[in-house]
Image (cartoon, rainbow, N blue to C red; front, side):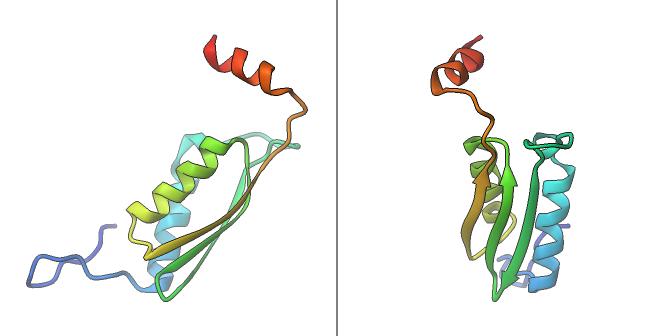
Length: 102
């Protein structure tokens, strides 16, 4: 679903329910947010009021947190309050860097 376009060819803001549904669907469809169960399980709750989005829940990494924020903004959020937490996986920063380089 895309934002509606008015006569001046400017997108009209979506209703809060439509925006919430759209953001939720896109996050659920994005394979980045698909995970198994356990400590690293991803869950994101989307709340919208007057076009302002609040994201809460738990994601696997700071990159996933940022991705959800960008996604909400790209889909028409007037602003985003990103309250997503990042799951602790028990590894040190060095281990994470080695894994991402390899």
